[in-house]
Amino acid sequence: MGDGTSIGRVRGLGSSHHGAHHWLTHRFTAIANLVLMSWFVFSLVLLGDYSHASVTGWISQPRSSVAMMLLVANVFWHAQMGLTVLIEDYVHNSGTKFGALTLLNLAAVGGGAFCIFNVATLAFGA
Amino acid sequence: MLVSILHRATGDGMAVVGLALLVWWLGALASGPEAYETFTWFMTTPIGYLFMVGLTWAFFTHMMSGLRHFVLDIGAGYELDTNKMWSILSPVIAIVLTVGLWTFLLLRDGGLG
Image 1 (cartoon, one colour):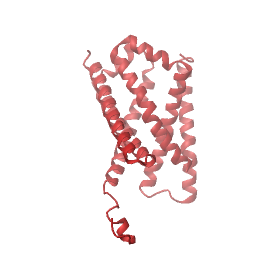
Image 2 (cartoon, each protein chain N blue to C red):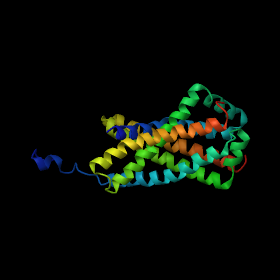
Image 3 (tube, rainbow over the protein chains, first blue to last red):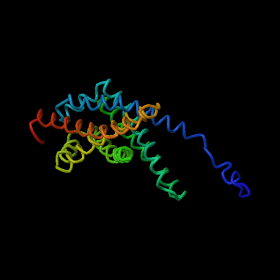
Image 4 (cartoon, rainbow over the protein chains, first blue to last red):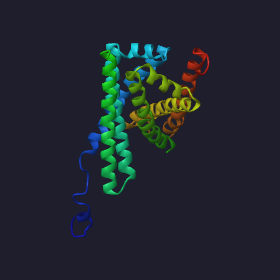
């Protein structure tokens, strides 16, 4: 912070140069989501029979499990980015913001890992 | 304005509610038929259907406004009439897709449950 002149007050507070990367990654994951979620919705609609045997039979095929794992990773990533922006926009107290972002990242990584593990369990027929 | 709010609300709504249900669905599938039974029981209650139809609507709304964002991000579609037309059409197409999908599912599977 400077001596109170206009330029001094803003110098060093400008772009942290991380915004573009976040913004672009949000778009890249959005494109992958469009592909993976279209696959997911079509597959579920075409499946028709939603019994345990039918759904596990479908999801344990290698093609489905790989797509499902990619979907989980990508959707959790994209969701984490969206919720990060939400928190940054509405939580202004820096301590609360830090706590909220920490909880969000724990939940996103934990939830994603749990989902991928379950798909793997089904794929390897445990 | 409304499309922008809808985009954020549906996206963050799905991020919380949709992912919680995804975690439950995959966890129940891997746990076995009994746990899956509990999941399908809940999802076929009126509240469960509200979640499923709501998430379908949120998905299509977010998808349509997301596609609109892609066009705007490359610098196209800022003419007033074009911009206005797609801001109205995006949420309307999402509702049409939601109603269409659930009409198809309910007609094919012969009603609820």
